[in-house]
Amino acid sequence: KANVLKASQFVKLPEYYRQKLVKSGLVIPINDKFIPYFGSREKFIILYGSYGNGKSKFVCQDAIEKCRFDSYFKCFYGRKVKDTVRVSLFDDLATEIEERGLQDEFSYSRSDNSTMVITHKNGNKFIPFGAQNADDLKSVKDPSHIICEEFDKFTEKDFGFLFSRLRTQKAQTQFYGMFNTEPLVENHWLRQTFFNDKI
Image (cartoon, rainbow, N blue to C red; front, side, top):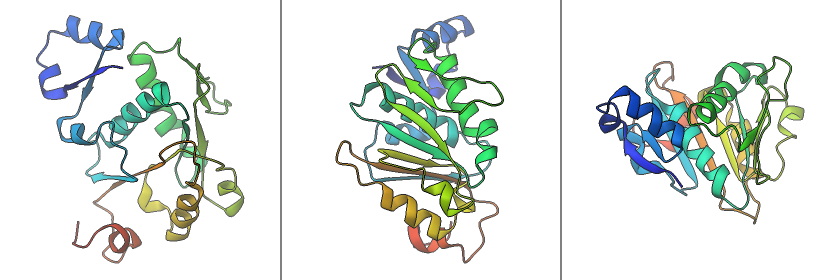
């Protein structure tokens, strides 16, 4: 497994060494504030904050390591609208794999009409989904992990259905939710479900 390095320390290294370390797969530079959650097996990992604060990158880093080393890892990753997954989470996952030089371990296609399924050589995989209607969610079967980007766009009913799918006995299941706090309205169900105080 790769060693975790605080991003604040990593950026102080010369560019040449940064590239070599990342490409070696031996070091993962993690945003300092997310380090306590890297490798966590907590049931829920809910990340929020302003745009561009590194939530998606961190989740991709964490999930890719679990995909590489867990005995059973079947991660459904998505957004409310599946068509938008290609330019967001799929691209983030593929970029993380490529930046770390892990292409020999994973199979996927970046073509515009690809399935966006990412499979590790050990059989573990990432599978995209959307939640525009009930039929979309029915494709989520036997997951070990679920990642929801723009979690605030999902309804409480969507969440209830997705969470009910996390029941496999093959792995310690996890749910990742990410959202930006700026547009989150006062009475949003996320506040009532996950937070006691205002965010």
